[in-house]
Length: 246
Length: 115
Length: 138
Image 1: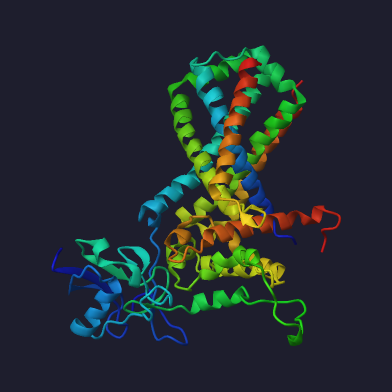
Image 2 (image 1 turned 45 degrees about the vertical axis):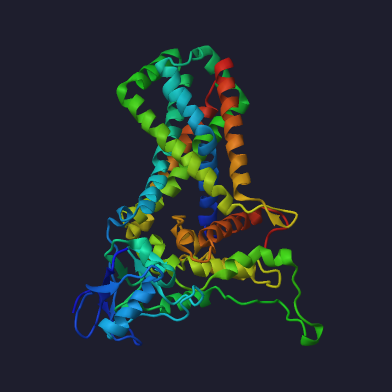
């Protein structure tokens, strides 16, 4: 076991430099440390000016996503021991604009999430007195996988289609749309299908499949997108049916 | 106007499935085994007799046209992604689907004109 | 200021990296993806090969003999060999990805991916045998 490991970390201080650079730090190696622990060590002991986002340290909050040796990872789940002997390259998430050091701007992502109307929509709300909308375990199972998303944006950083075309609505947002479409309490699947069928929607996806591979929660956005394409394609042929015209 | 993308994607999917299921055997037989004599090729008369059957004609038409549209759709996106030609969106789409249409027209004409 | 710097109402200065033209060489999954997408070229060529064979058949015995002679040329043997590899790659990736798009539920439970992919492979074998029997038996 080495006594220490080198981290090459992206620095970008817009008031000082016009492009990001890599700065190396030597941190002690401990086998139970993850990359986030090493970053916190740097911040506490070596360089207090390093900026990065983190919160829960346990793979739930989704704020510590970064590129570790070129792959999008939750740094709280990326053990230093898996990247020996180093140096370990830690960079901000791909394809997002960098604000400072390891911090990216997620405004675009937030807009996209909202665009798919990720809440339960009813044609007619039932009165409160009628009680809850009940659901069987099988009905829950239909969408549960897609509801596990923690908005960590690793899937966007793995998606070259998003990299090439920033307007693409992207993996997490489409998976979230599918989560509500498959929910037995929701009645707005058609509305969302129309949103996703727009120019920057699901048809942009070429099924690279990396989004599902990097997802720390096994949400499988790539699967969600292909399933929605199938729904969209079947829907397209409805006009052939006498009862199918809208 | 109805967006045509879902329809084109259906052709892509159908063509991809047909190609996946049937092209390996056709390529092995027509492209390699028969010309190289690895398997005894059926005589001209036998093949010609097969081709004249209405079911075979329909089969050939489907097996040639749908995979051409599979190519058009997939290759179009490959050009956008790999060569970053998104700005030539329309031109590439027109060229790819026109090529598939042309190939399909030739196939349809050939199948139609079998005596 | 570098051309990569942008301004928005909320953030003083952004830096946005440009995507390299060679992005698809940057990791193995992307190379795999591009190879998978390029199978379409050989799918198209194989369709043209079938069309060529059909037209040769329709045009008569000499045209058909000419077609077979062409296929014996090293160029076409090589092309068909490489094409076969790509088409097999297409077949395998296509079947393995089918269950991602097609979710089948029986009795409320999702049919496992390997079952759907497996059925594709079974259909592949059966259809290949059927085509071979028809062609070889006439």
